[in-house]
Length: 125
Image (cartoon, rainbow, N blue to C red; front, side):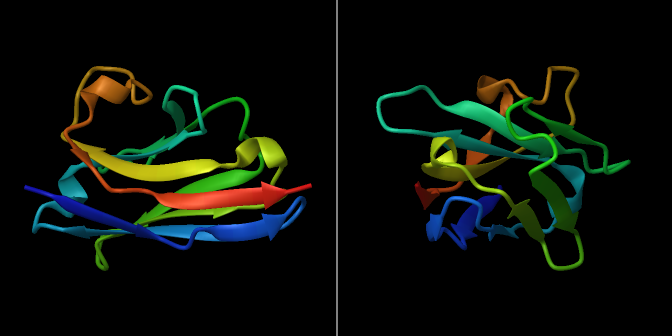
């Protein structure tokens, strides 16, 4: 069982930066593939980024490449999402998620077993 709690969201102007954190409970945090997803008002949840447990390989949605960076600290059981050059289109509730290693694409929402409640990110123009 894994419990996830996000923090770090807030209101920022376009071009600004934020760093989101996701604190995980559970002794096997390092065994899970971790992802960030976001959901804007009236839209479906979409994949943002993911990181594997073993090699630390990272994956990004095209819309965030070069601006968002996912990382993890297994010793602290914490997942991060560093966001720079934020745009109004990045406004959404950001959730972290966890799953055991799988052959399914890391961006597939339904493949994740555990989800946090989310943290709101609002980017003003």
